[in-house]
Image (tube, rainbow, N blue to C red):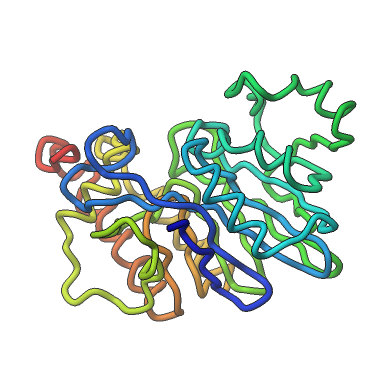
Length: 283
């Protein structure tokens, strides 16, 4: 059965995508922390317009397209934004361009998202063949979702390659790409993709393994600047949902706050104050 879209805010925000077995083949996921790993894309909808954040992986093409067809029609003016130009964000881009009314593609940095496929025309030919705008954005810019609704583009130091986060004021959602993905799933379906309560207690060991598997350089870094960056972010924005590209989605102000505090704690206790050998990120 095809996975269904998950409605986060009625008529305004949806999680689309599918899951992958966490069997050691996922470079970002720590084996043993979950059986399945959600790979999330997010669709923001506003008055005949929509913004799709990170189309995701080619392996999920059928599920992604089916879910998008449930939410938007051929007349919807669809824009795309890639938080990172890595394969887990962009390899489903071609089928979305083929099947939907894509009017613009946004990205940051200097990489070319079309380098990841053989079946998508080069950048200039995309503009000509599909009449799609391809626009570079920088931190501090905004992206229009639809009339009266924009999302803020944010820089982050909590990354490996160039990565951008986004904040949607209307829904209070922070889109965090490959960060804040603290939980996978025990099963392949996405029925409990949303985490709306705080685990009691937190499994700090599993959380540390998931946080530091990909961004393992943080284990050798001075954590103070990164904690300060998080503190500024959460003091500036009213964050009621954290929407990572991997893992369960964190919903509710109290739950968001607890995961923010967990992240501060992990950065402070697992950073340069401890030997990296004390955190076994790969199980």
